[in-house]
Length: 114
Image (tube, rainbow, N blue to C red):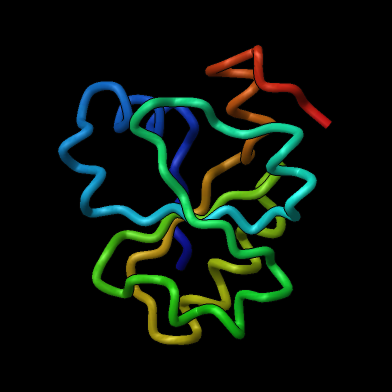
């Protein structure tokens, strides 16, 4: 089962529990143009970019020992990738509920929606 993380929970993690970030790896599965258009801007936020179509070839870039948070624009693609990761031996997989769109609407309205 895929666990869900809300953008509020991610914001709290970034702002109030930055020491916990060492236990997490964030994967953004959007296309390069999407990252250029809208991204989470926070000094503690780091992610790796693996477009959805390349996840099967690049799953070795994902650290199985960490909690893996997968994100996209609205949560659909990230849910699919999270399922794929679970089926391929990852056991601590989370989906960012609502994706970058929810981040823009609930946390940082300066991030454009598209």
